Image (cartoon, rainbow, N blue to C red; front, side, top):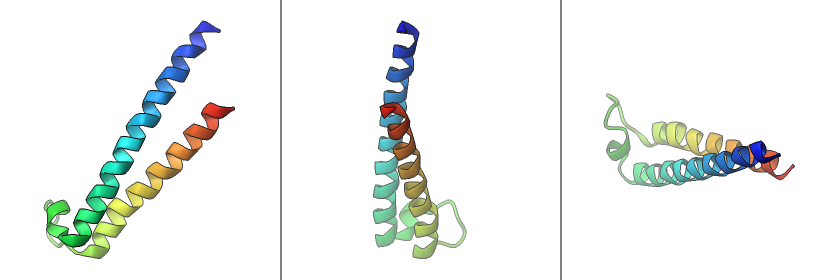
Length: 75
């Protein structure tokens, strides 16, 4: 059973990394709603809809992944 303790530690680390990425995506989302150029400088055309699509989609996806991993860890 000691082999599974490493799995739990790595799952907690993975969840922590996902939460950091989630908060970064939320920060970029709110910053992009103020000035889209700040977060979409790499695109030719920047607007708030694109900010919502890219960073809002990333936030939703990361939230779903964190929820699934938390649920899996609690089993």
